[in-house]
Length: 152
Image (cartoon, rainbow, N blue to C red; front, top):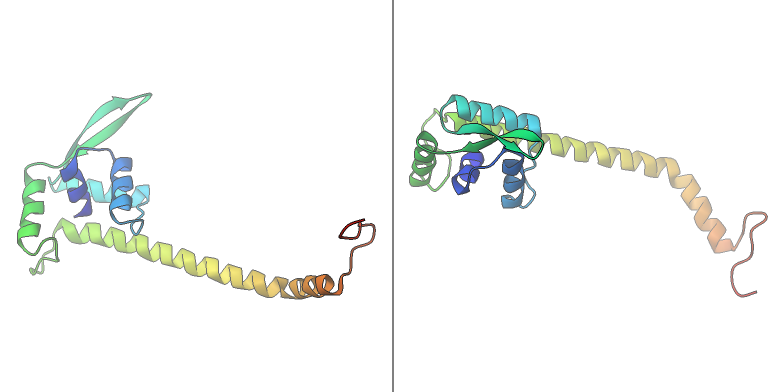
């Protein structure tokens, strides 16, 4: 749904879609290229978006746009509750896009948990050194060969 909303604003390539969604969500959704590619393929296969290859600088990029069936889907979603989950059990392409976002959020959360665990382990490992450095500073001890602090 977010991809359709993004393409309703203007035609753009995959990276542009990713940047726009990140901006619109204020950084909540950060799409990796693989997840976005799969969602775009699904939307193209379902006929909700279309694209054409255009040369840009030294390479060709696929510029995507939503018209016809994609706009109708977007309009019907807004009529059925302004973008809320449809009430029918068949969510169509919308569930696939939402699943991709859920995967990205889960990946980000796992990364944060791992990062926090590594930080805790480092803090535990460095705690004796940190306590020694704090004691050394409080005692005013200097390593051999270093100049004393303060005015000479």
